[in-house]
Length: 123
Image (cartoon, rainbow, N blue to C red; front, side, top):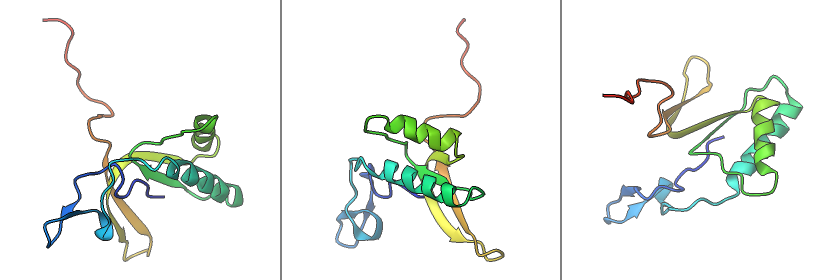
C-alpha cells in the first residue's frame, strides 16, 4: 500500500501555466486526510487473514491512528500479523522485467538516521 500520495506535501510541480500541482494534476494538500492509514491497516489484515504467507507493506510518511484503540490495532498488525510499515517518501514504482513484480523505490523518513555517530556530551 502506498499512502500519502500528494498529501502533506506543498512542494508540488510547477506546470505549464505556472500553477503548482500535485500528482496527476491534482493540487497538493498540506493536510492529512485522517482515515487512509487505518483503511490500509484494515485491508492489510484482511489480506494476511486470507493468506498468511502474503508479504504486506504499507509505505507512508508516518502511521497516524486517530481513534480509540486504533494505535493498538495498528501495533497488532505489525507485531502479530507481520505487516511491514515503512515511513518514507516513495520516489518510483517500476515493473521488474525479469519477474513482472513491482519494485518500489523510496527515500527513508527525512531527518532520522537508523544508526550513526552522535556528538559527544563533553569537550
